[in-house]
Picture 1 (cartoon, rainbow, N blue to C red):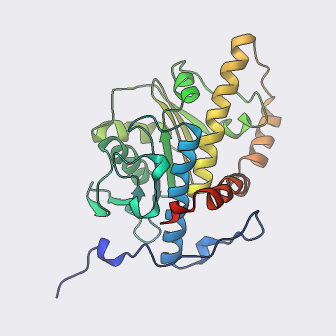
Picture 2 (picture 1 turned 90 degrees about the vertical axis):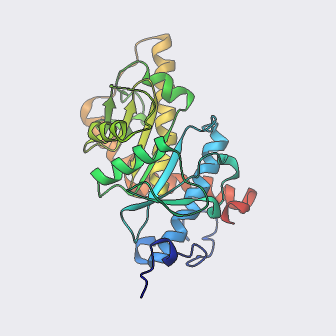
Picture 3 (picture 1 turned 60 degrees about the vertical axis):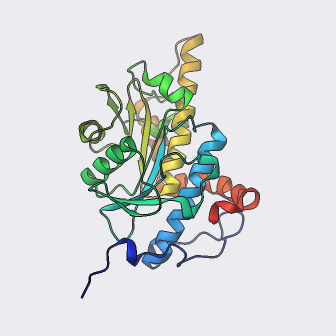
Length: 273
């Protein structure tokens, strides 16, 4: 009697939920749903996230990747196939990789760098359910300075004392070592600035991870602009901490991304295909 593999057990067309409608009132607790519903919900958010990255210009060539850990098979994660443009990403394009680097579901595997970075972070942190990494203009420019983001605005407080620095860039992560080192640098933080490389965010779901990434790029831009014309004034420690806890929790981050997703539902519904 043959044993079904993970890929054979998955049907990404099952578990579809109806559109919540515009705004926040129709949002649900997806964690209370079945694995099939959680998976389909996550895949829709992941395909949408790539579309959002494309709209923001985070789609230079083959660099950049967003993933989420499969809700049922925790040593597997969904990610983009190599060579597919972010602006054309659909649910049916996304692929499932296991921690051994095997393509479990989908037509074409992801890139080596994407696999190495995401798999090692997931291995090291069971609490992380989603990861986003790219080389946006302000993020990669700020990363070249080898310095921390300062709490110079309400928005940038989100990253105060939650962001690690990885200052040992050793080339493209086409082998496990770079991914292992990035995971070690991240440690128990939520975000990491990859010196001479770019930025990376993690979260409890695609929504929070992507919102933090968008906000982190804006924080890098803000600090670069402020330092170009003067010496920015940092928000005091206690105020920065209380502000961070208010604006950078899962509920706030989740809610902040929903309007962008609503726009995609209306303007580019083919991401659901």
